Amino acid sequence: GNWRTYDWTSAVSSSKSQGNSTLPLHKPSPVDVMVVQDRMIYVKRDDQLRLQGSQISGNKARKMFALNQLSSDEFPQCVVSYGGPQSNAMLALAAIVHFQNQTRPTGAPPRRFVYYTKKLPKFLRKNPSGNLFRAQTLGMEMVELLRQEYNDLFGSDWGGSGEPPLAIEPPVPEES
Image (spheres, rainbow, N blue to C red):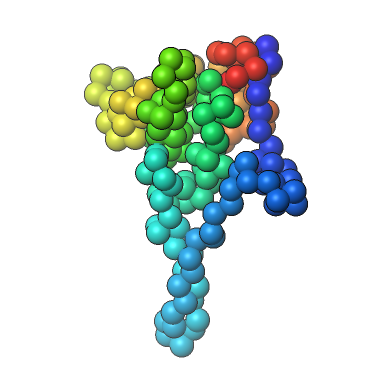
């Protein structure tokens, strides 16, 4: 199957060099300067960032900015990711896809968010809580995998390649 992948670095670089506003850039996180015990300390204030619409804040706002800014036409039909069942990134992606669904044109198919994770502990499967509960409430579709399946697909317990695994078919070819 064919996956749609983004190289955010080159997209933002080419947007800058061509004066293109397809991926608008945002102001960097403010930095507070303070003196503590006669030492100058710089504090990056990601806590002051908030993405319009999805309301994501903090360092995830900085990391997810380009995806959040895609127009309805540019946004993929399905976002696919993987990681732990209480991931902050999982919740941020769920919020972005949910926001896209709230603002999609009438009659347009809903966007999907498919998330791969290792088998959940029994207590969490029976009683979803925290980020997992919130992401599911926002419409995330979860795929649980055995540890070995997960490691085979995504590299290891600590992540893998940025490329989509060949063994997984995109839920929506060319749009996932």
